[in-house]
Amino acid sequence: PAVYPFHFPPDAGSDRLININEAGVEELTELPGIGETRAGQIVEYRQTYGRFSDKEDLKNVSGIGDSIYRKLETYITVD
Image 1 (cartoon, rainbow, N blue to C red):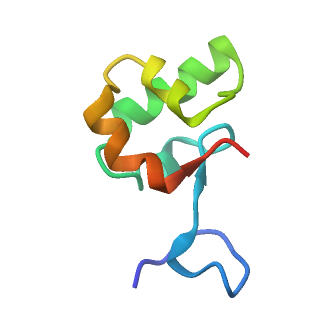
Image 2 (image 1 turned 90 degrees about the vertical axis):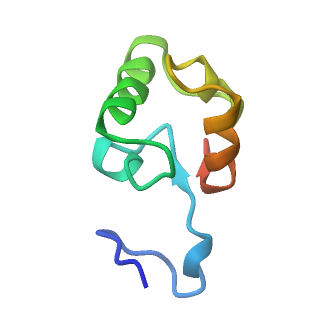
């Protein structure tokens, strides 16, 4: 099983979501299709434009289109 550097409630299991409004580069790289470069772009976009109000806003980040978004939409949250 995967080991994560933070603690979640015991019932969270593998259903843990990554908050794209709070995650740093290291945590974002755990998402499918997101390497260090794209993770950095997500953080930079958030710093420039503010919090994502909807998960689909992630597609506004350069290099993240529909196909990448579909791979990671079930793993992310904005709450």
